[in-house]
Length: 64
Image 1 (tube, helix red, strand yellow):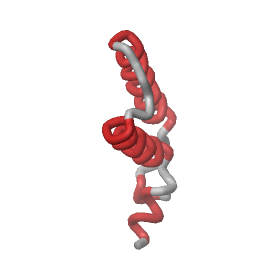
Image 2 (cartoon, rainbow, N blue to C red; image 1 turned 120 degrees about the horizontal axis):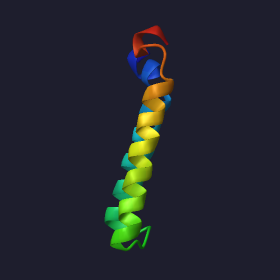
Image 3 (cartoon, one colour; image 1 turned 60 degrees about the vertical axis):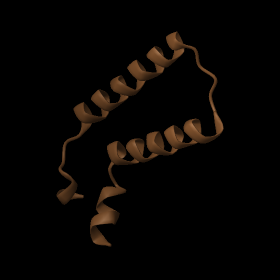
Image 4 (tube, rainbow, N blue to C red; image 1 turned 180 degrees about the vertical axis):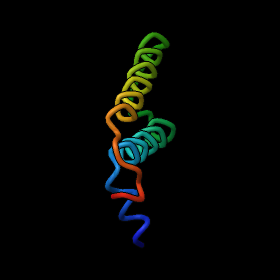
């Protein structure tokens, strides 16, 4: 349980969980109606967010 608590303190992990939930929602209920251009922009936004989260990370998960 301690490991899960440590993981949930990470913004990168929380972002990944949210991304997974949205992906499942999109696959099952078509939550978002996006054309190819918008899908590309969303993908670039996600990649940018992950890069930003990685850049601001200063401590390992074991230190949280």
